[in-house]
Image 1 (tube, rainbow, N blue to C red):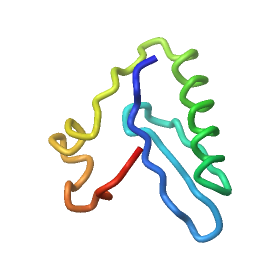
Image 2: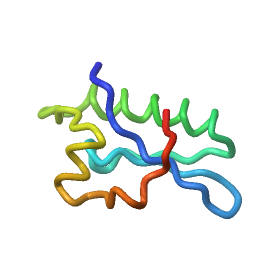
Image 3: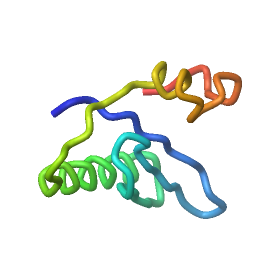
Length: 78
């Protein structure tokens, strides 16, 4: 499987995540570890069931496309 960009956001009491490459693929969790595992499962499910699987673009392409503002991205990510 390709490596898809995942955005994790801290909410008031939990975390949420989405992939800008795979529209509709979202997950929530109570910790970064839980949201990471939940998002891996969500991505696998979506990709296994899609007719046209999107290619992973990566952060640089999303910045170039205007999806993300370079100044709003954390210096560290994993």
